[in-house]
Image 1: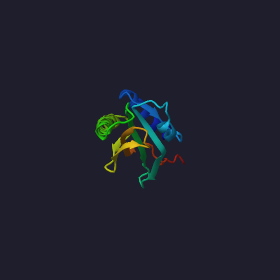
Image 2: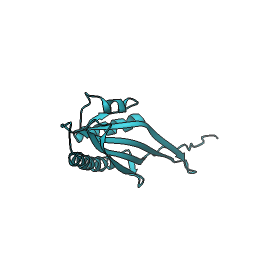
Image 3: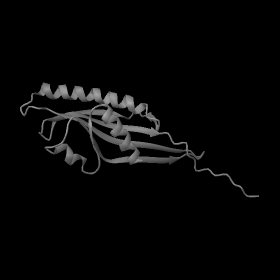
Image 4: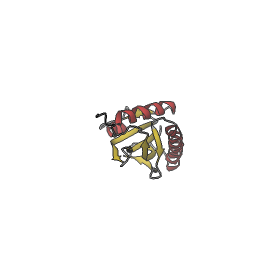
Length: 150
């Protein structure tokens, strides 16, 4: 499930002109001097919750935290400049969610999805939005089998 999730995010990030970093070292990329911005950082872990209904239908819910960030070009950037970045990244979050809704495998973006803004994180002039994403996956597979016994 994580591979599909990363592929989806990478495609949408590219469409939105955002770099994409993933995996256990994602946060290291976030603070690296050579990190490219603006970017999406997929924080680990990506969680998948699986439930099997009595009918045999398998429900899959995915939870992930995505950091939408950009870096100011000035070392002494003002609070207003950081707020401008969070506004820009919030617009990217909305565009991301709009595109995610149109991905075939995504069934529904859940109401629990929310966003937090951050200003000048780690004192490295990076600001943006943390998207706490919750969605369900279309999964028509069933664990029911039919018997062919005589």
